[in-house]
Length: 455
Image (cartoon, rainbow, N blue to C red; front, side):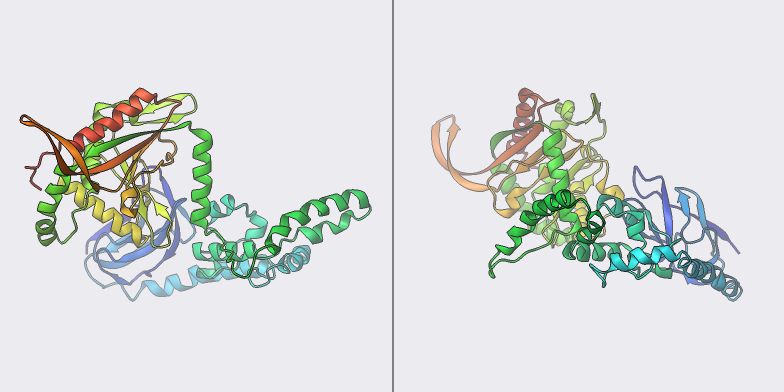
């Protein structure tokens, strides 16, 4: 019998601990390598943790709801077989369910809490519990969403949960937020106790009336769409970035004919060999990484009055999701990859991003960002900086144009492929000379691409 210790894996650069949400396997269950064994929550995402070995889950060392540091043991796997599979389940069944049931039954004891519950439930009876679920466990992700959306712990106790033992999952709180936005606010009933001050009460009511008036002006042809949580967060971060950084944008037009001809030559062979498309994105990232090495002060971030220069070149790329939102995974140490490695990494991040399979580590640690607006047929754009970075590059659509071609025999008119590069940078720390020279250097690398490159 060989016993293997399973530990809490590292799930991101800045993540040092996780909360055990749910064990998907019981003690005594047979598990396969890479099969999901448990769910773990961090302050960024909820994710499933796979088994590191095949065998039998001999012992669970950490109960559901406990917080575990990265690297700490969480389970013991018996890789020798299923000899002990019949012993463990009887001991584990009561341990998980009974204590949780007790806490739910004890919660209704304070009779005073039921009075506000009835009033609070009135605006949105479908989305709220009739009485608070005191003592219920909340994952870090749920608590983070509640904090960002202004949901107090008292209000959170009235959110119905569909998870194990009535716990609130990510889907539960997002569904509650949808109904919360659509439901009428309980502000009007709370203003009744202040009736003696007639003059002071009437003025706030007069101020709130105009706020609701625009809704009645919509015609039957208008559709009101509530922002989902991701779109709300994007809106907040974009406004915050405009407030923090002094945005300036420089533009350069590049002749990328060599790049286009090279891709046309290789894309079919690459697709047949690797089973993946060969896009322009890895070519752009390679040029950006080279330019960053030439101008390292563009690869910085700002913290207060301090400029942090990063030695690692981690280039983020904006990926469009099916719902229209954007997510920005990044390629770690992009300057250390060859063209084939970049192509595979780009395809991997793009594919996982579209099916919500990115990890916290994929989304953290970026030092510079690019956005390929040409994929939407745009000529150019003025992108907004990803905080706390100081620059972002937008790449426009590649179009054929007539151009003057200089030759030893004289100038000629020919058809060439051109694209615009739009470089937005933070003028607090990046001057126009650095911002302009950097984007010009990226264009130079694209224009001088070696057509004999082999991938």
